[in-house]
Length: 377
Image 1 (spheres, rainbow, N blue to C red):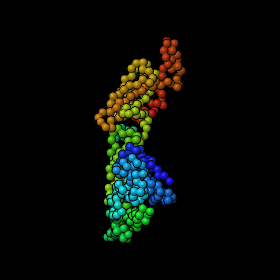
Image 2: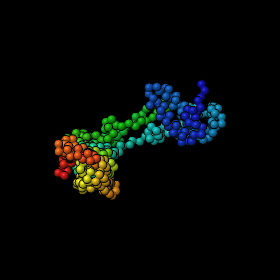
Image 3: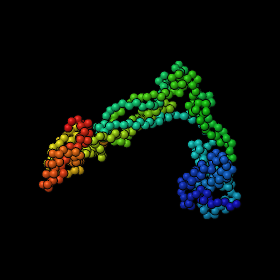
Image 4: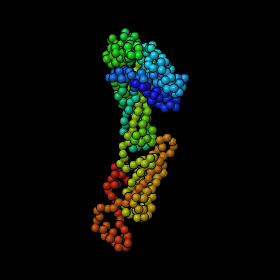
């Protein structure tokens, strides 16, 4: 059976760089490694063999030049290029780098080191004014902490964890395996101590030997002025406790702003729809308008039409990162009366005869909303 082209085997072009050849080899070696293909080891072994043979040639500049000139004939009968006789150019060491993180057949025990705790998420609902002006508050966050009774060791007070006899404190054990490629050593997590390197013979009664307890911790947070729904605050080191002396994770507070009864927000601007009656629109008036800072006076010019918008500067939302505030935009709505007395109807008819339009009076539904939110206007 004729051999496949080495470039085709690795899936690279003839102009591929050394890094591209190496990257392709690593990907295929991982794919066809017998330990990964236990369902069909025979086929995987053949594929793995073919990939290694191609890489052994193409990773060596001199051999690659010979192959480019003479093809497979350049290595007919040559030892090493046709099988597992020679893992040249770092082939075998590359495989070990992939699967074990180091080269060669010797694997030293490595004790599991400190591990950072997990981050936590806390969803918090605030009102419109709190989002605008910020606040300092306290929240309760359920999280895992080191047991204060045993100081996180898991051992009862007066006792200490002991070194695991199986892994001798490394947290890992070596498993030797005979493969078609020779004797290989895998490093696995110790089953007895679960990677901790220590075992507890007299567990702490408060945490049952885990060294961790679940509590609700009160945490003070400061919400800056100008936040909006979707804003996220990071509170450093207030997440889950770390493992084996590692630092705790962080707490992320996600904010959700409740809608306001009167105001809506567009960026840093505040929008208010303000009802006025027909007389105010026709003759003009000075009215009191609610803002986030309280009531202010707004002049309504004579002949104002419904949907006319007035701007009140610096009465909007403070800028989250910077100075100043947005504006408040007041969109007036001329309210059409629903019920009129006979006298009002008579006046309007007389007004219509003189060429005038419709008039209006207060709409109680709109003004009740303002009174509920800001008191009597």
